Image 1 (cartoon, one colour):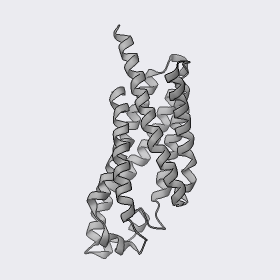
Image 2 (image 1 turned 90 degrees about the vertical axis):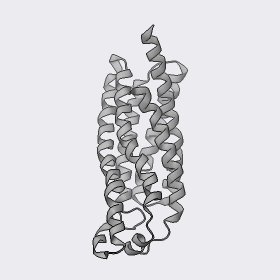
Image 3 (image 1 turned 45 degrees about the horizontal axis):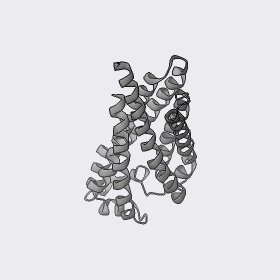
Length: 221
């Protein structure tokens, strides 16, 4: 499961990146929840929320595998990484479940029944009053803490352990750094942080898959 989860993470991130940056320019200026509902298209929206939901589930398995990989003296770092990964998964798993399976149905209903849209401006991306950015910032900030803590697992002096440790630290700091700009709706800073994240997280996951593969081959000898 460790290698599989490590290989799935880049797939979810690349899928999300392509779908999100294709959808985002269609968002337009906020003109109210009814205008949002009238222009809402479910398919492009679901194309980027679905991999986010899958990532939240996969990341927990990934971090459990990192814990299992850790040496006995480093398992404390791995366990802390798992603990924060579970919190991240619970927050953003719930968030993206709602965004994928609940919110679109309500928005579609609101095209013909405006009363269904009451309070929905709090839940949709693009609304100046939305909780969307704050929830994401908190969830991904917790993910960053998870990666920072798990970096302590990779204490080996070989090149791949050093690179993985460095990328985990970079990724963790970077995710936490976009805590504030995303929750404050600072779009440019959030997009820059997002671009860095979609590069560093897949690289870290692929390197972890290599480490897991090396460990598996060693155990089979």
